[in-house]
Image (tube, rainbow, N blue to C red; front, side, top):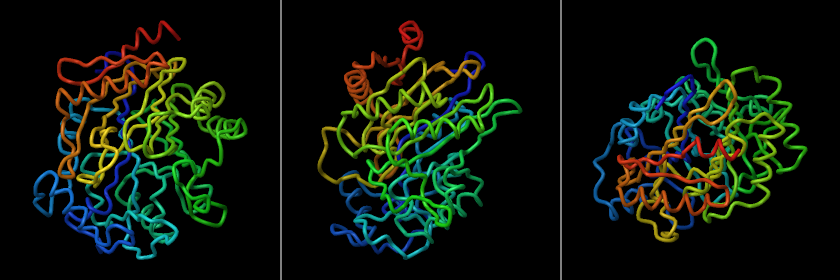
Length: 378
């Protein structure tokens, strides 16, 4: 995939290793839940098994990644970034204002290192599900495991700080992580000078763009690729609000952002390449415990994509975008079928038409954007 001096990033949507998935790993948490529908996390395991067959428990730490491990080895991306949407804690201090609380036992963190993840962005609507103690546990557990974090912290300074991923001696990927209330992040979760929390993006205004640009200018240097990872928007629906589009464009025009990594929707959304810079408006859920739960079937939330984004550090522009279609079954990532790859291609072409984004399916059922044709139109 790498044909010249490029930086390749692996990005995906929400990785939700709490609740049902946590229960099949070697060290399940206390399964008690405080939901109106399910009171025991093992209930989600039973629902999934009813839909797709038994899961032999406990599974190995690498089990959940399934076919994704071969894809990661094949592409060998320079950095691997996921939105980790769960608290990693033994805390019982669940957030009572929420109806759903995701938790993974800290001893199950090897399920992340098994895929050699470099960075977990945390500015989302589940990282504080088990209170401030749960957030502190999450930060400490991930950092002790050698995983970088961004988007949440023990105070505002830590929550706002970007993650800096060094590639060799000269190249860097800088990642800022934000959570928007439009995705369900509670305003009360915002970090402050004396309180832990998330890096909350209050609005999509010009002032917000200006503030982000100032943060970028403090760390950015020639040859860096600057990523803004953002949890925004609702769970279902393909429509991308005009405010999100305008904000994304302004981040590229005025704040020095090279790549926007959007997530929150439970299904993949449209892709735009704006002035040579990729905008992934919604990467969908990559791993979750929703198998067998009815509703919204038309969105095919079981399907997702591994986004391999190659960026040219000489100009900060897209050099290549290849996506591997996947399907979650038995709490495990599988390569999607040819028919499902075609469905994803058709869906993304429909949703990307307004942006002039056209995907092709390769002979091996991967999706690609023709960067040359996009470059001609930029």
